[in-house]
Image (tube, rainbow, N blue to C red; front, side, top):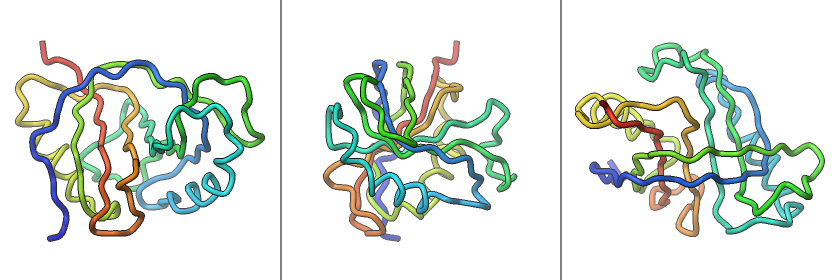
Length: 167
């Protein structure tokens, strides 16, 4: 097993972020992530107001989404995006998204992005055993920074899972 998982996430409060990118509706059975990112990466330099070089791989799940992943045909929206200062210049065929702020569990992950064990751990172990937090109905995302290397076991990324206090 090459991946390394920080089993204890840090809890962060995210402030609102403006994103510009491309979106595709897909399912785990019909995963079109590669197509989405290829399309986005060809044109990302057209986005002029980006704040950082970090990329956002974001999933917007319907409220009824089953995080036991038993229904691989359940659809969700996947985004390839970058954070921007404003929405003044939006390239053709790209969309805007305002990521609302809130509480997130942030897992530092090292390994292949195709290895799903991290998500099995988050939703099957960490979240059910967490007495303080529940899954919140907001977008999930990964931040792909300087240490992200596509399809490389030494790749590093941050996995942001929306949570709320269990009151």
